[in-house]
Amino acid sequence: MAHKKGAGSTRNGRGSNAQHRGVKVYAGTTVRAGNILVRQVGSTLHAGKNVGTGKDFTLFSLIDGIVRYEWRSNTQRKVSVYPAGSPLVAIA
Image 1 (cartoon, helix red, strand yellow):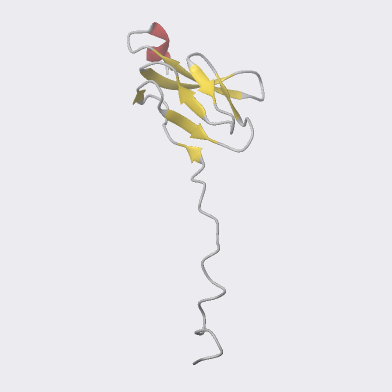
Image 2 (cartoon, helix red, strand yellow):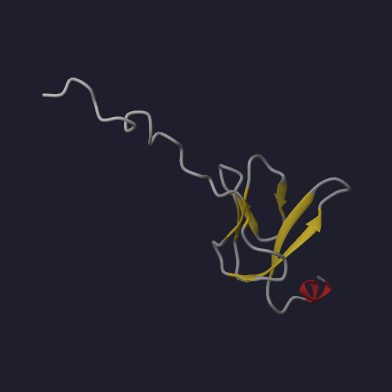
């Protein structure tokens, strides 16, 4: 019987899975309620109208509508979702 393990296998295979962060849906895109809009670390983008925030700062749509990225203040951005017939959607 061998007293050594096969070469190369014992130090591999312990990497963590990728987290797939970033913007998932861009402005002007139609979304359904519950769709993930942004996966992020911390609140880089904030939740606007009809957008919820998960415990890991994931932003998701609360209604069916069209995505719009807006300024919340001079330095902060927000993501909002407006119903398809809303006049605010045409300004985007």
